[in-house]
Figure 1 (cartoon, one colour):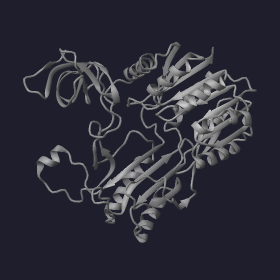
Figure 2: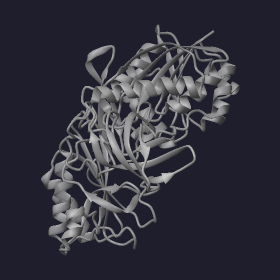
Figure 3: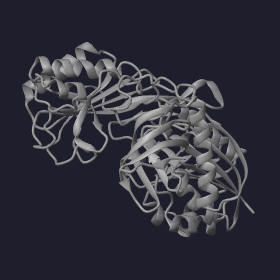
Length: 477
């Protein structure tokens, strides 16, 4: 156990015994107070400098490591510890999976008081690095300096950066040379854009003063081999913009969709911006194996504003689990709630009698209809509507009472009205896919009124992070 030093801001010899919220290490002081440590893993013994102190817990950063955990591994990335992503690169991947499975079970039991009849083993990821299909990078004219650079006192010529924001410092950007999250040619594209911009004196964005030319860079890669690049400019400078875009097109002919937008708003969200096509087409295609025809693939249209599962290979494992839990025989009517661009709906439609997808974003529904037609799935229907308003008894009168419901809500979980309507409809089975087992636990606790929670299976979509997906199957009592 850790003991308090005489000074109020340190805890000495703290044994890290678990991982907690947002992947922080967890220890306990001699008086029972919980300490969250942002740069320690279970098994470490550390001295901690405290920067947040509450009645029941403290939070800090390890400054001295007296004993290193046997479960520590060497991080792959040179930016580990400074970059805000991949915080578990220094923790054995099998231990990450153990923690994630335990976290899901604890959330379901303690938060939702959910009785799960069987927990299946977590589905780990075969590719724990270079698994993401979308990355967004920020330009900054004031890059994050290392402590050695600060101590040297030397003036840094052109302190520009293209990379990630430092955690908790919105105006500081780490210049990233190699990121281990997205496969090639992501790193090559980012590094080319940076070098071209430096060589041709293109202004990197000033985050504090809201001025400059280059704002953000988004790269999408697909299992199909297609690549999308979108550059966000703060203002229009036609000659400079076209010079960069043409150079990028010439250097990387595999870019199937080269886009840009001019965004002078106070934020860098592109969802209310007009996207302009420079070269290629305004979308790329993602591919996923067709479960019932392993030698063929399902294809999905992905635009610059589209949502698609970030880990496409592991998304297949997630969808297979949902399909197996649904136990479709071939004649069922399935509702796919929060259908997005219809990826799960298309996967289910391979076996279901009919799938009705509901989604609040009109553009996503347009893509869902396109994707169903692209894959020859005529047994689908997609409806635009706010879920809590759309899913009603009148909706069921029009579209039919579902035999199976698959729901994949956002992190906040399902609205109470949606849960209530599911209880009223009482489909035979509900497959609940969740990216937040805490809100899933809340919803499952309410659904227990009429349902048995038969099985639960965690699926790791985000190795080297604390995030975890979970799939549960509910059967009517």
